[in-house]
Length: 114
Image 1 (cartoon, rainbow, N blue to C red):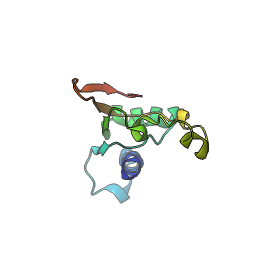
Image 2: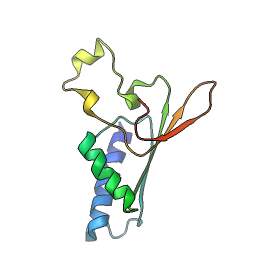
Image 3: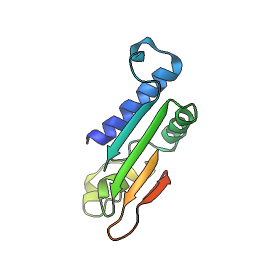
Image 4: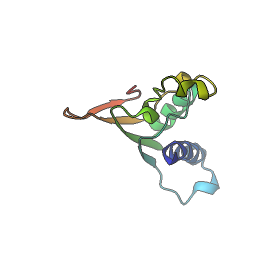
């Protein structure tokens, strides 16, 4: 699930960029992640820090998801929900969401498209 890893990497790279860390000096000034059907990876506290980096102008995330896809919406139903450990409903989406709907116009909003 590379989209989740891309989200985490872009977040960490932007954190280091905001601190002026030498390890990311060759990366662009604004870190951008563009993910497709990526799972949500952070809770509310993670999302707050994500938004701080966005407001500083060092991070941007564009998420693309399809209607009915359980991975990006985290809408996992029984019996699969029994297999997973922990409460996945604690995770929240971040960035700009482009939600593709069949036979309808694209929904564009910031944050949750769940």
